[in-house]
Length: 62
Image 1 (cartoon, one colour):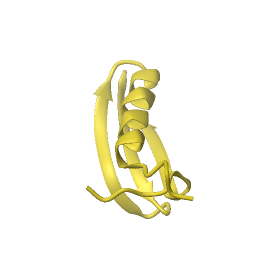
Image 2 (cartoon, rainbow, N blue to C red):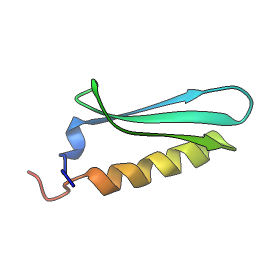
Image 3 (tube, rainbow, N blue to C red):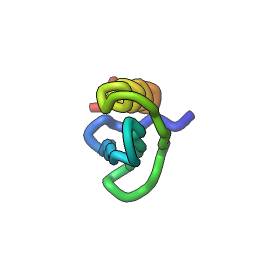
Image 4 (tube, rainbow, N blue to C red):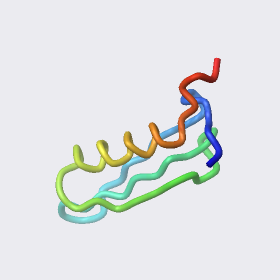
């Protein structure tokens, strides 16, 4: 899997009705890397998105 520097990743979270959230992980604010839909609180969507960020981040990139 391709890894990206965390500074290049941008997270977007949008509400989609009652207790449903869409999240998108974008490279350089444009290219979609990963996305998902979470039911429940916005915090659940943030946790899911943060896990995706850790998965695709190259934390050793400097």
